[in-house]
Length: 211
Image 1: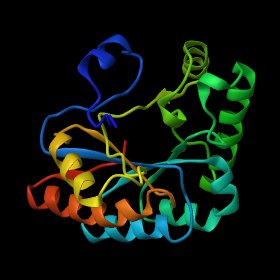
Image 2 (image 1 turned 90 degrees about the vertical axis):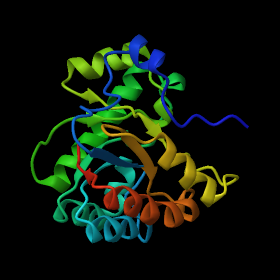
Image 3 (image 1 turned 180 degrees about the horizontal axis):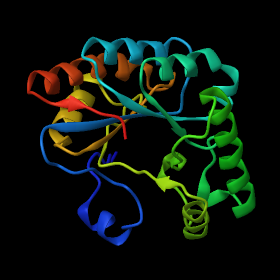
Image 4 (image 1 turned 45 degrees about the vertical axis):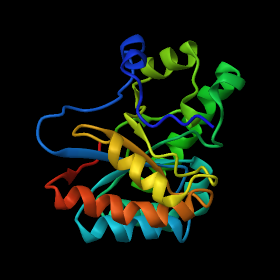
């Protein structure tokens, strides 16, 4: 099975309208967590981040925010950022334009309700799948479309936790936008990899910032 960890430079060059990574000046990494917030898994992530005062961005499924508002509020209380991952985790390639845009708006509304105000409009398409028309419309509505530089593949249940950690460390560099998942599917790998990943880079003098 072929797994992609590092986003190829040619992809970034061909699709310049997306945020793939940040400035590589200094030792700084950008952690992101997709598909939450949910009980147990998201609080585990928050506890790990708090140990080294790391900040992160959580790309939330709107329906999870609706059902677990107290978890989303705790993410905010600890100084992290909530961002948009559609309301129903839609695959853009398989979803009509208006339906997709409405689903993104539905997620944004529930995020603003939890935040108590309108925040930055950060959006990541589920599975990284989005059509050109969807992307153009979202940019026109003020969204920054955030992809990634390094994908941990933590959701892959056939991937050994030790291998997941090894690859995550290997393909991370300063300025990387890193994708983990605070989901039940990723829980086994996440619980093994995240604390060791944080320890490795924190001990090397890296800091972790939200987007």
